[in-house]
Image (cartoon, rainbow, N blue to C red; front, side, top):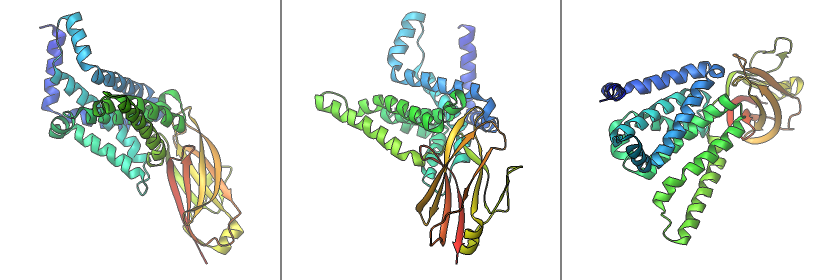
Length: 337
């Protein structure tokens, strides 16, 4: 047996003996990348590239195994390939989890997407679920892989290519829609011409659903490091005054209010965000801000609102949103008589 085969077999057996090692490594690398988000473009790029290559392998597995057998004279065992793919899933999911967990607004619909990623990560380290339930259903297996790739791209694209959150989401969604074709094809084989129309309709539905559901997806590389609703801001030091949670209508009209946010973003990323002021769930004002990534403490910016409705009492929110409508965070305060 060639030496490289011997070492490969030993590594695989070692990982089988300690299956949690890959997941732990993925989580640690994710935390490290989160803390050093502007310096870890290389790691994010490697993981995204491996995910794309592994997806191609999954869809063309039988053809590629046959070609390798003809070209090099040996056959790669299917269990080895399945285990390698499982390790990719473990590393990728646990890599992105710290990004999504920190950037999730947990009292919003974003809980569903981050919760789905957490469930997917647990499945990747639970062999009975992964092999006996997931891997045996090819359409579900490919869908699982596409979800993992989608999450990796949302994290990697802003870091590697400095794309805005909106651009990253559009590109990641387009790739996910294209890669969902094999899963749909296995469900709706094109034996009749009208099935092709159904397949196209399903692809369009996935794309439209993914775009409409973007408000439930956290912006993986944008998060609030500091925020406050306050009566004044030190413009020289760019620091907020004391945070306000409750104030009267009189105080509101005499002082006005500042919504202060410090947003962390990857180095070199330029992003437009919005402070959306709402009263009892109704939008009152939407103010645009341009932020620049790279500062460890976050890019500090604020909006100052002086004009309020005649009846301003109630529950106020300042939602911090991307251009695509993904929520970065929420500031809250109440106005009383």
